[in-house]
Image (cartoon, rainbow, N blue to C red; front, side, top):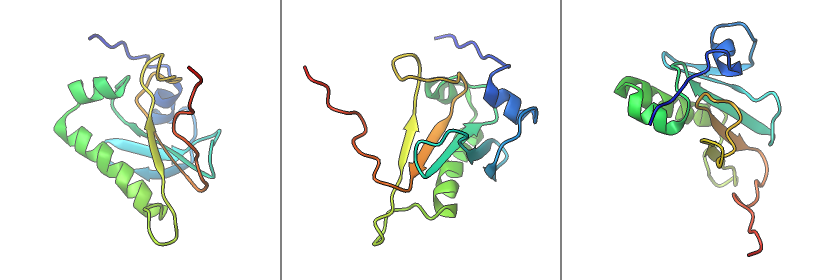
Length: 128
């Protein structure tokens, strides 16, 4: 499948330093920052620095180093923010939206890490 990357999307502009962000973590291949419109008390976005549209595109085209770095960056954010489940009841949700049916709004791969309250059901039950 072909992927067309839009170099003018908001995350590309953030990566180029044209738009500021509230950085949580930066690694060689990834950037994590607080979402400007958080849906939970903790809402961090993690993006690869490379021009990848969706998770599928990333897995198909990224180097092993980029893939490992991206997933480790997510873990580092979870650790840094103390979100790992434990006796205190803390936990988190990791969300990747891909394509139209996945309601992806920015065509640059990004992972949402959400926490800080009961997040409810992942996908509400719909009447049949």
